[in-house]
Length: 526
Image 1 (cartoon, rainbow, N blue to C red):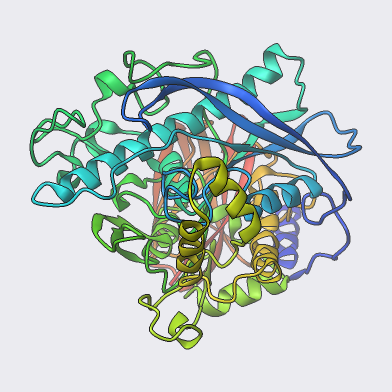
Image 2: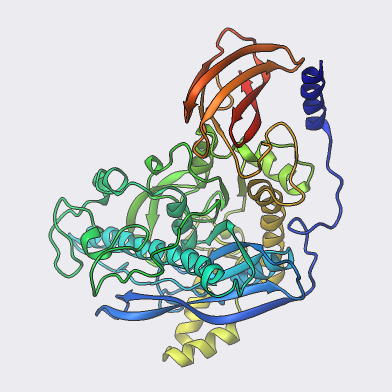
């Protein structure tokens, strides 16, 4: 009887809506933000000038002013810029001090997080032409993403080092870390979430293999564009000078969640069950990074680079694999309502549907928009151009070009999109990180650090269950009246299967027992 009442209570919880009140992590409860700039988080070899040189890697830390909490979740934030420096990339953005980047980090801090906006190594050759042009463009871009991935992981390890060796100077909880990437930073964030097997996910895919020898870029025909023996592994460990220098090697690079704003994933095969949850924001007609699947093109020339998997496919696969199941809770916010109107049922995906920019700019060569959350100040761009030796006329050309895919660019417009991003993201970060304000219902465990994945979910009746953290001792399956339908004792299994094809379509409750506690998952047969 008690068991039935408990399960019926779980059912009732699903239908309850949460009271909306100002609450840390969900809302901006702090008025001011303290920024600590130009912190060196490591050093590594940059190829930006053509000759590898050891370069300091910098980050800025954003903290809520006056906060007394001793351990706050951490956001590692990666800016946009097409893997080249601002202005040299022929774009009006491309640094960790971009307006949208700073605003995103400030809003995270005002919600009670610590945000670290990082530099990462830049440099590739988007202007390569001729018979070997695409080989060079593809290979050098993949090398750039790889170096940036190594730097992002270095930043995570650096922040963990500050907890251990610097008396937790930034007051972070290093068990709760999210990586958020904007634009080209989104490519890095998605690689962080999924790229973990070089031999199959890079060396095993033809599109990541050099088409011809090229000593200038280290290409060997038929071999991966990325030479791990020289450049080190995906964590930035190993390798040789002057291609890689390992940093903070005794610390973990693990993170809990990834957020992508307008980037893409190198290949859908990178995703597998057990990868961290992913939330994506993307303009559906983005001309540079595909919303679903397609070719990455050089923004300034339109030349092809590499075929990739966009946000829609990434989130769809994450849901199919069960990686995003933690997000399957009731929501009553307007951001989720809007996203669900246009995301075709893919939880964790917020598409932005924008009109053709030719409606605003006659004869605009582009038929889509990108990065509507971006804005910039032309006067500041001129000052930056002067410092870089770039004429005002050249800066004006860059400014006008940037407007072609962001018509009506303004701070007010950018802030409106950032409001939607933060509003949709906040409850999902709270849920995955098990923060105050999380929905406590049937998809929670007694131990909030213990999670299981169920995939596919919904299913036709065949489910795979994965518990990477703790072995499963037994499970039970109930219908929503509390009636037990299946039960089985297991021998410390990390994964198991359930065949319930003979059951009617509907919602069921799966109860999984481990030494860490009990988890309840909602599963759907359709």
